[in-house]
Amino acid sequence: MANFNLSPPFQNTTRSVLFGLLFLLTAQALTACLPLAIGIATVTSIDLRLERRTIGRNIDDNTLELKLRQDFRSDEQLGKTVNLSITIINGVVLLTGEVPTDDQRQHAQKVAESYTETRKVVNEVELAGKTTLNSRVNDSYITSKVKLKLLNAENVPFTNIKVITERGKVYLLGLVTPDEAEATVKIVQSVRGIAHIVKVFEYIDP
Image (cartoon, rainbow, N blue to C red; front, side, top):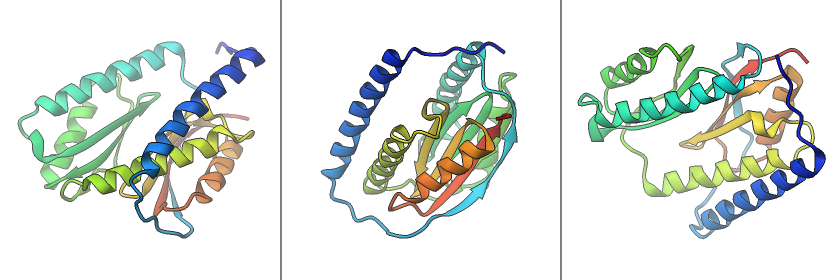
């Protein structure tokens, strides 16, 4: 497996740009002035084991995500009554959001499983109505806070971790070592407003 190392100047520039973008997201979310719950989030683990994704796998993930978004938009069984989010890393498809019926929930999973690029589907879709605008803004605010925390951490691979928040529940995806996973969760637990943390990590050797 090839290793690609970025030079320190490029790393610093990338980190600065990412920090700026995340700061803007946080500033926008702050204007909503939404109340946030305070407490220690519980953690659920959905652990997988594989090596870090290749450039080809990265392209496949992005292509598959576009295909599934289009499928869900045009699917008559799903229609406009659902709120589905798709996050993919290394062929693992995380489905989150809300649908009115279990038939729709299972149908969404079958659509995701129908592609050869899909290795596994983690179906976290809830049976519920669509979340409110305030709830979605609050979720975006939590996501931006988590990303800021991880961006500034020295012991987590920020570029290999994806963060998704639904109804105050934070999902963590990525290809990490066990130590990186533990460090990531500890950082995320320090963020206010999180109801629950779900790890959807693929573990690699240190």
